[in-house]
Structure formats: C-alpha cells, structure tokens
Amino acid sequence: MKAPMNDYLTELLDICGEDDGAVADYIPELAQADPDRLAVAIATLDGQVYSAGDADVEFSIQSISKPFTYALAITDLGLEGVLERIDVEPSGDAFNEISLEPSTGRPRNPMINAGAIAAHALVEGGDAPKRFERILELYSRLAGRELSVDEGVFESELDTADRNMAIAYMLKTVGTLEDDPADVVRGYTRQCAVSVTVEDLARMAATLAANGMSPDGTRVLEPAVTRQVLSVMATCGMYDAAGDWLTTVGIPAKSGVAGGLIGVLPGQVGIAVFSPRLDQHGNSSRGVRVFERLSADMGLHLMEAPESARSVVRTPRVRDDGEPSVHELAGDLRFVESERVLRGLEAEPEGDGVVVLDLHRVHRVHDVARRMLLEGVRRLRIDGHEVRLVDPDGLLPDPDVDVSEPGDDTPRDGYVPQVFDSLDEALAASGG
Ligand code: GLU
Image (cartoon, rainbow, N blue to C red; front, side):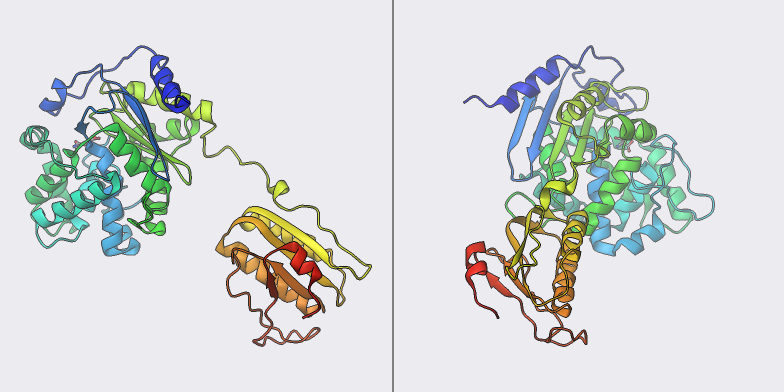
C-alpha cells in the first residue's frame, strides 16, 4: 500500500494557498533565503516521520530553539531557580522588546528574546563554548542526528545583533546575567543559527509530545520539564499572536524568523512546517495556514474535549445471589475513568461476597487511578468483601492494602487481593 499520510501532506501543501508576507531581513543572511520553499513533517512518538515538500532543505532554527534551551535551563537549575529569573506571562510585546517586568525586573517569558537570552545564560557549562556545546548536544539528541551551526547565518546575525546586545546589557544591570553580556549574545546567536530540516524539528517536537522520551525509549527530558515548556509554548510561543493561535489552532507551538514553525500535541505527535515568508506578527504565513488546516482536518485542537469515559467501564455485574460480582475496566485509566469505577463499586452492598476487578483490557493505569482503585479495594475489604484482581500485565503493582480483617478499618499491613491472569481463573478460584 502507498503511504496515505505522505499523500495527505502533499495535498495539504498544495491547498494552503497563495503565499503572502515577506522574509525576515533584519538578519541580512535570512533575506537571501528562497522565499518559495515549503515543507511539512509529522513525527509520531514511536519515531515514524512523514513529510512533504522541501523536507530536506536546511534553515536556521532561530526562535524555535528557545523552548529547548529553556528546558535545559530548568533541568540544570530547577524550575524554581529559573522562575526567580524569568516569568511565564505572555507579554503581548514584540519578540525583541527591550523591557522587563517593572515590579520584578524579570523578562516576561522565555519565548521573547529577553527571556531566551537569560535562559541561555542559565544553562550550566562553565564557559560559553562549553555551554553552547551542551545546548547543541541536546538539540542533536532530540533531532536524532548531529546538528551543526550555519556559520553564515551566525556571523550575519552577530554583526547586526545590537538590539540583543542592548537586551543582554539590560539583563546584566538587574543582576539576571552574571556573565559578560557580549559572550552570552554570541552563544544565544549561535543557538539560533543551528541548521535544521522540518523532519529534525518534527522529531524534536515529538520528544516534547512524548513527555521527554525519545522514540528509542531513552529519557531526554523529565516530564515536569516538558510540561512547563509546553505550557509556556501554549501561552507565549507565537509572538504577539499567541491568543489568536491558541483559539484557532489550539496546539502549543513555537515559530522562528527563518520561517520554521513547530507544534506539539501532547501524547500524540510533533509537527513542523517551513515557509520563509512571515506575516505581520513574524510567524510563517503559509506555516500558520498549514497548521490551521491540519488542526481542523485531524481534530488536533487541544481544547476539544475527548470522548467521555463512558466506554471505559462496562456496566458492573453487581450480584446479591452469592455469585462474584465483576467490574470490567478497559482502556487508559485516569482520574475521570477511576471515578466511574469507584461509582460502580459504591453500588456493592456490604457483605462478604466476592468482588472481581477485571483489568485485562486496561492499557495503562495512571498514578492517580492506581491510588483510587486501591482505595476502592481497601473500602470493599472494610465492608467485608473478598476482592480478586484480574491483572495479567501487573498494572496495579504491589496491591497491598492496609487492612487485614473484614470490618476492621484500622490500617494494618497484610491484605493482598489475589491476582489472576484471566477472569475465568478468578471466578473459579475458591475463597482466599
Ligand atoms: N535570532 C533571532 C533574534 O534573536 C531569533 C528571533 C526569532 O526567531 O523570533 O532576533
């Protein structure tokens, strides 16, 4: 079979309409870019990448580097330390505004240049080259190949980086930068000049979508770090069009002045588009249209509520004839699903009947669900029931519940519900 995904992406590029806007020219080298380039890529969490258009053309990452460097700063310094120096409020200002929060002296967020330059400087490394090396190493791990700097773009931006220099000196005056501001801007400018393709960017975005786990199962970033980064991308990632973007496209995103644009759909995919002409907000003009279309076609808007949990819990067989009652659970158990399970258990009358919780169709038990289910087991036990678990994959690890005797709610170690591989075995078992 021919891959339908690639055909869909090719079609998507065909219908994304006339290009408008203009390439960024405040960095002279960017003005040389071929404005007609157009590419899109989607990466799944297990490492599949689909692309169309100029997918092997390299361009500079620019501001799309900001969320990844922010992630490294948080990894190095801890979230609290970073928040003390960089806030997380959308600014509504231009990306290169020379301003800080009047009350705290912090840059407003890490997606505008002031916050991004501060975040760059917070990355550990000892000296500037070492710091940059660590940043490039992270980007390369996320992209799944060794990335490098476009020296032409780097030199060109550094020659004209007066505004970013002004920002860095301003950060130094309020004590946010300890290092030499010129060194920091040099490092930040190198970070922005890293060369990528849409496929690289889609892979980098997919690792954020996977809570920091790369497709080969290696942890690159901690889940708490990716959550912070995605939250900031959702509120501040699209320059001063962030509100418009979140309402229409509904995907945490980050754009860069070279025409790149990434979107991260948590738990699903990483997406990247490249088209150099920018709209009045500095976002890739066709890139925005491609995302709008993708989001609508594929139902990717984050605020679109998922299907309800109704299908996850089958109507329980609550018995009053001495036969075991069976509660069948399925799918992914989180808070909402577990609440439904507990509601089913509440219907169990007090007594010494057998209650079976059948988890053999469950894929995943989130921590909150595990705690809720074990509390349910504990309460069933207090009511006098014998509880049997059908849990062939061991999804409810160590289900030891702190009561030992029916009717006794004094916490005590010892009650371990019997675990079975199949419902038949659980029903056939004799009392335990
Ligand atoms: N290197 C660019 C700058 O600092 C990045 C800006 C952007 O992509 O928004 O001006």
